Image (spheres, rainbow, N blue to C red):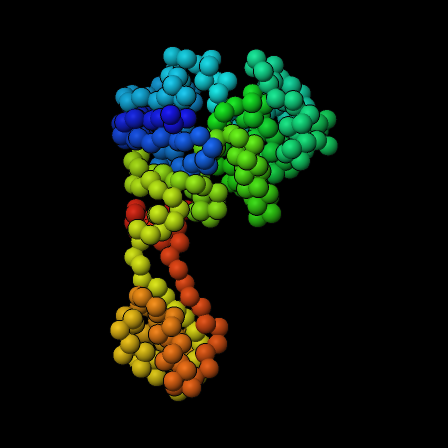
Length: 302
Ligand SMILES: Nc1ncnc2c1ncn2[C@@H]1O[C@H](COP(=O)(O)OP(=O)(O)OP(=O)(O)O)[C@@H](O)[C@H]1O
């Protein structure tokens, strides 16, 4: 049985359709990504999953329970960290965690939770004195304090510096490795590609594709690109004679070749035959960014 099952979910705000016939299921033990640009309907979708918003139509099930009807049970099963969680400035880390723990029947050991998130030494620090990364860790701890089966993280790394982002990614992997299924809402490609087992690409309230990161990339044009630097007297058009090569262009010393099949071998054998020493030879592959643009016609970070 999937841990979360969403069928034909619809949600409007007045005239605005935020979620338009969205269906997906999340399997136990995976990191499931919901990826899309700002305003795509990601937060609304997870708020409906968590029972925080009523859907207009469709159904949501969390381990067989309805998040609106079986609210208390779903609250124990699903830990939610929502965008820009804010706590009172003077509340101390340990107090916040103890307060949240008091809401649940079998909460986690708060000391161990702080330890595992690397903020044990911040137990007595007021919320206003925490760094961005430490606030983020606390919000993860608050989502995990109920010992949930699934954790929902919404835009976890927005606003963090590169090191704090990478540390947060490790934390998310640790959460999954501890047996908690993770739903990760993000508009960052690199984050989705690095962390998610499967990704629902959401655009304008609809799911444009749902697949593994590699599966999404495979849907894009299989064209490859090889670039290198070559002396000016090398005529790049000799490359065009090879069947693998679709185009060869030069800009100054920089040559850019596109094509299919074993393009790298085709290029290097021509260079060897012509006795050309190429510098800075690179193969560019499609990534999730290309896949996203191919699927939706726009950049996720737009
Ligand atoms: N409470 C609300 N009232 C009216 N419109 C809303 C409300 N919440 C969201 N919307 C609109 O619904 C659409 C989907 O918003 P939602 O927050 O679900 O998207 P999102 O993908 O999570 O984007 P973001 O990352 O910017 O929050 C947006 O156009 C948004 O402006």
